[in-house]
Structure formats: C-alpha cells, structure tokens
Length: 403
Image (cartoon, rainbow, N blue to C red; front, side, top):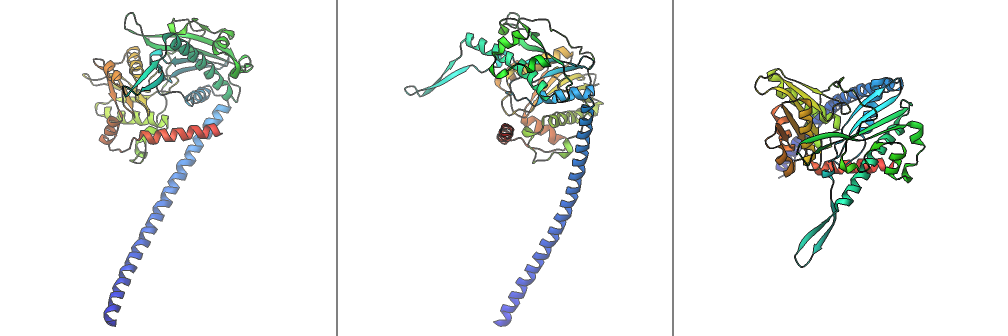
C-alpha cells in the first residue's frame, strides 16, 4: 500500500511540476509581451504628445490655421442633442482678428413636441399632449437665439491668446419649402459682436432675444418663419482645404466600441474603410474638417465610368435613432456639392421617416450592422454597444460638470 500510495503521489507531484513549469513559461511569455506592448504604448504616447505640443506652439504663435483648428475644437466640444446638425464652416481674418462662422441651425421639424404623457386607466393607454404651434414657435425662436449667444460665448471664453477681436455668427437652416416641397438653405440670423462688448454682458441674466437685438443682430422678428437675411459678413467658401488623414482601422479590434469612439477617429475610420472600398477602381477618399465642409465629413472621387463620380460621405457617431432631418441635410449637401451620390453612415439606426425620404433618391443609408459588415469585409473587427456608449458619455458629462 505504501509503495502504491508513493507512486500515486509521485505522479501527482510530476503533473503539478509540469503544470507549474507551463504556468511559469506562460507568465514569462506574457511579461515579455506586456513589456513589448508597454514600449509601443509609450512610443505612441510620446509621438502623440509631441504632435500636441507642436500644435500648441503653433497656436501660441498665433498661426491662423492653428487658430481655426482650435476654434473648431472648441465648437466640437459643445454638447447638443444628436438630432442637431452640429455642423459649421469657419474662416479667420488674421489682420482684423475676425472669426466668421456659418453655423447650421436645427430645423423646427426636428424638435420634440410632446408636452406631457398621461395614462388613462379605463382604456389602459397612454395619451400625449403636444405643444401648440404658438408655443413651439416661441420655443424654436428662443433656442436659436441661445445657440448664437452660446457659440460666441464659448469661443471668447476659450480665446486664451486674445486672437479674436470680433466674432460674426451667421445662422443657416436647411428646411423644406412648404409651398414647393423643395429643399432650401437660407441664412435667417446674423450677429457680429466684439469681444469687449460681449464679455461685458451677464448672460445668465439676459433675455436671449433682447440680447441679440441689443447687439444689433439681424433677423426676422419671427425666426420660425425662416425669412432669409443677408449675412453681416459672408464667408468665401471657394478655398476649401482637406484635412490630413490618419489611419485608425489597424488599431481597432473587437473590444473597441465604435459608438463611444472619439469623433475624429470615427471620421478617419470611415474614410479609411471607404478608401479600401474604392481602391480597386483607382478611387480616392479625402476627409474634410467639420468647420470647413458645409456638412461633408468625406468626399470620394470614384473614376469608374458607370457607377463613379463625386460621392459625399457623412459619418454620424450616434447613440440614438437618426431622424429624417439628418437624411434631408445629406440630400441637400449632395445636391449643393454636385455629387452623384450621398452616403450616410451611423453607429445607430434610422427611423422610418429617414428611409422613406431616402427612397428614390441617390442616397445610401448604412446603419451600425452595415458598418460592422463593411469593416469585417476589409479584415477588421469591432463592436457597437449603444448602451455602453451612453453610459460612457454620461460619465464624461458628469466628470466635466464636477470640474
């Protein structure tokens, strides 16, 4: 019995020793890989910090392009509902230190109108009470005045090198002419405010409309009427410049949530994937700066004689359903650009009205599942988790509020 038990013990001991040796080998291998990844991370971090410091130095030296990029970043950090256009076009006049903004305002039709929801026990149904047309018009007008003042305030507040003496805000609305059914785009409000004059205002106490008028803003007394006005200063959009792209796809794996990705990384990822899609026909895809594109995130030039031409691509990193207003904006941009086709890509999905509007038009709507399929087609994997993204954005918002 002793000899048998000893033999069993020796076998167990040998297995344990073999297991320990394997665990030790795996440990050493993991440590080696970790050190390798650590060096790569530190190198990437060093290169990234170097680029940031270079950008900072250019901005502090008051380089006009860097000032434009900085102002664009300020506006990009403004938080608005997903159904707001959040698109703009900037121009900076270095000699006069005037910043010009052509800002896309939301259409009244995209605003929520539900005033209250009531549960009726007898019918076991919910009934909705909606805002009256008068109340909705008042809400819409107040919203536009507040966007104009907020935009100028954020730019002046962030102007740490005193590069701005004056800001001109031109508010543009893409809408549908109720009489003709045609898409229209018009400037309905324009405001120029000097820095000293604007910073003397106590915004928390003002009536937005009265403040706009006090600053001699130009616009109809009823903005909801969408009556066009002449901008105080117009932007010359002929000199459009594309932004230098960078690759993202190779760094994305199935643990990356596209819905929570940095918006610039997301736009570059879309450009990169479509570039791979068009490369077989000799096509080219260029990404555009949000402040300079009039609603275009990327433009593809496809030389194919049958299906080719100029293609407008917009990327929407959304966590909510994309409404018809975004699709309508894409169509208007496609027409204005003289493009043969418009493509809208989102991490979420589209509402029924969006698909209905796109039907019969040269538009392609790609939802989150389509995007993941396109990535996989070109050898890349990722995930889209809208709930996780909403939670991340909520935490970021809370952290920002606590600061």
